[in-house]
Length: 120
Image 1 (cartoon, one colour):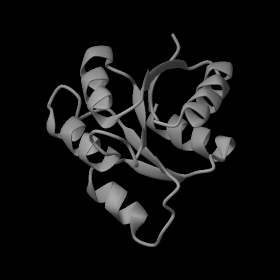
Image 2 (image 1 turned 30 degrees about the horizontal axis):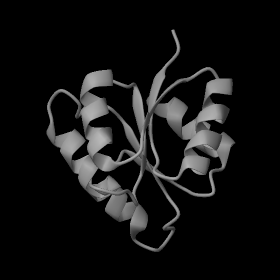
Image 3 (image 1 turned 30 degrees about the vertical axis):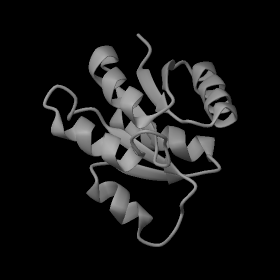
């Protein structure tokens, strides 16, 4: 059975490109375009892993991650933060908000797949 990935990304082009690449690798993709949708879909869809953009409308990725990790029905789902903010301290901030790992954009697919596999 293919692993279900919740891809949270507000940029249509980024979401489309990454989702097509992951589908080619055999993953089933569930999409969310903002933090509120990410929290809702983490509960309703029960994905195996979440790829969380941090700069999101409505609720940002930091807050959405905190909400998902605070809910006992979803706290076990691994979350990998995806961000263009590759500033010093960002990885620590992402891990501090509850993310299990961190990757920067533009996405290095082999590196991201390796991180994903370590949680799946």
